[in-house]
Length: 397
Ligand SMILES: NC(=O)C1=CN([C@@H]2O[C@H](COP(=O)(O)OP(=O)(O)OC[C@H]3O[C@@H](n4cnc5c(N)ncnc54)[C@H](OP(=O)(O)O)[C@@H]3O)[C@@H](O)[C@H]2O)C=CC1
Ligand SMILES: O=C1OC[C@@H](O)[C@H](O)[C@H]1O
Image (tube, rainbow, N blue to C red; front, side, top):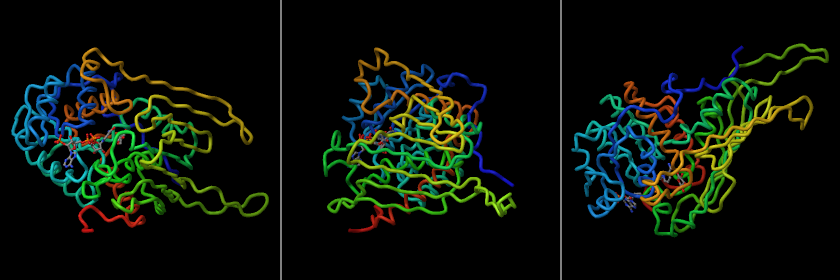
């Protein structure tokens, strides 16, 4: 009988021990906002990576960004940047509703692309972009940077080595106080037509945690509840439970006290919470028959893991393992350009380095976070949106 298993650690290049080692690649930055700033800052940890161009809707904004990051070419139009032949890959850091159009633009200009999360506002848009990338033989990935943190890679190893036994439960939360940084209701976070709302903004992270620890399988049941802002029509917070079916079917066996029904391997539940009203510990906890593992907050960009292996008897811990993977320290160049906006953003360097390795090796997606997984998670996000009665961006009010 088959038992569920977490896929082996998906190294893009198993011979690479240093997560920052990578061949040269020339980047163009599309959208000159906060996350693009952080991404450029993190690239400064990678001497082989060069940002050769940036673009924004306004030339002034692109120029200010280029000056801050010492980028030689800036453009007041995304399209103009895509004509620059030096640009090999585009990092897209703009609003959610523009994913399809900007993704299309980049791929049609024959550029490899990282689209920040969410990959798209609908499965249909995602499929369109995936088809285009395939047709043109280009690399395409959702910017699920979590997957490239050494702590997350380690957590995958731990699961695939079955140290925790059969995974039965995953808890993952990501709630932050949007009011700390984004004004209500003017920020794009609250604009339904721009793809705002917690479901697209933070939902991709807990969804990706569930899909990773349940081996990229599709849940057979999804139940979501949450609050929708009445004025703006976007989700403010969501609790979602996903149920995973068994991967094998076991027949009852005759035990000493009659028929015994062994546990069904692979069955599991993921309990996910995400939103933008309050700050939760932002942890992911993975629990299996032999122990549990906590990916310490901030769980979407973690540096620490804590593993407790069970001893015999309820509540008994046999062994505790702690893993710590500090981020690279800010260099004077990074400090001078203003540091980072978001937590642990130096960790973008792991994602960028892995993508540079993939592209040099001719890969069209990253094994750490495949297009299939992106699609699976978007399908769940769409279901949650339906259950909460939120209109998709293309529907009229
Ligand atoms: N991986 C991560 O850790 C993070 C990812 N993100 C993701 O990054 C993306 C951008 O987020 P963030 O940088 O925080 O957002 P910003 O508010 O900084 O905006 C980013 C860019 O979006 C464009 N934009 C903003 N408002 C509008 C509008 N009304 N109409 C059209 N375009 C607009 C602008 O592009 P332009 O410069 O061209 O004018 C702006 O620079 C989102 O997908 C978000 O989910 C966000 C934070 C962290
Ligand atoms: O991806 C993200 O979206 C929302 C941000 O506030 C958060 O820090 C970031 O990582």
